[in-house]
Each structure stands twice: as structure tokens, then as C-alpha cells.
Length: 220
Figure 1: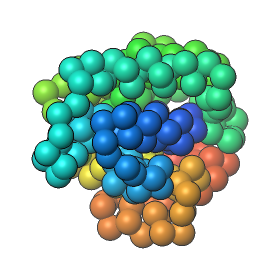
Figure 2: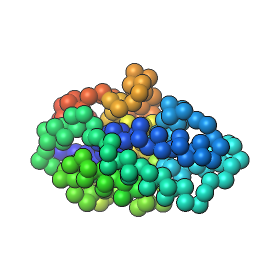
Figure 3: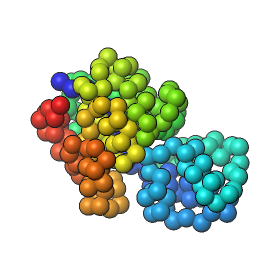
């Protein structure tokens, strides 16, 4: 049975709209006007630091030294009231069991751990959480998926990755993993699907109820 590695944001928890809300607020405070839709289109799947660096070059602005800390504080506060698990993901994880799953995320460990706790998904992952903080380079580089696979005792080519962003799919594909693209939390799933396929996903799906069958087909 292949080992299944999940991205967190947009795959396990519907956190991307909350994250983009905070991003847009921070950008506005620093003189950059951007809609949540544009922020999602341009930066979903990337680290917050990578987003700030790109915008720093584009707009020639300097962000506060504590911008990342502010992002985490504001987002964790939103998590407490607004965060929800992706529809159907708990049932899908139960149907895939009994087996261990891993997470490979471009979000900080504390944010991932909090998201799992608030949505009651911790029991499926335990401490098998690898984030960009554990590796030299975040997604779209392959490091986080290679590390997650090794921690679980698998070669990357023996893993199936569930990803919702082009950035994540590229990273998992570069790592040598097999990738399923999830479009269920994207605001434009019909547009996102072809992008994920082009980035390296073997298949795309829109509803978590489809996942157990896709994994059982052993796309390896």
C-alpha cells in the first residue's frame, strides 16, 4: 500500500480564504492594494515569506520585521472561530485506514498542529508533520516531500501526495512522488484542474469522497 502524504491548507482544512484575508490586510497596511482573489491566484501554496519577497521586489517596499509573526497571530485567532475541515475529509481518512498518513506543508508547524487540533484530525497524523521549517527550501522545491517520505520510512516514489496548488504539485512531482490534485476548495475548480494536471498531477478530483477509490487504484 502506498504511503499517503497530504498538504494541509486547502486539502485537510479550508484555511486558504482565511489566510488570504489576513494577507490582504497586511499588504494594505503596507501600501499594497490587492484583492483576496488576486492574492489566492498569485500566492496560494507559497510561503508567506516568499510572497513578501516577491512583492518587495515588485513594489519596492519594505515590510516590518515581524510581518510573519503578525500573520501567524492573526490567522491563529481566525482559526479559533472560523476554521473548518474540508468537507468529507474525515470520512475519507477513515475509509483509507487503517494506515498512517503524513503531512507536508509550506505553513509553520504551529499553524498545522493547531489546524489539526481544532478540526479533530490529529488522530490520523500524530507527529508525522513536516513543514518548510524542517528543510532548506520550501515548495515548489521538493525538499519537504522528500523529508516527509523519509520520516515515514518510504521512498518518495512509493508515496501518493494530495495537493491543491500548482506550487505543491510541482514540488511533489519534483520529489518523485505520485500526485493527485484536489480542486474542491479552489474558487474556480474547473480552471484549477487543468493547471494541476499540467504541473504534474496524475489525476484531479473535486470531492473527498472520491479519494479512497483513487488511492485504491494504486496509481504507482
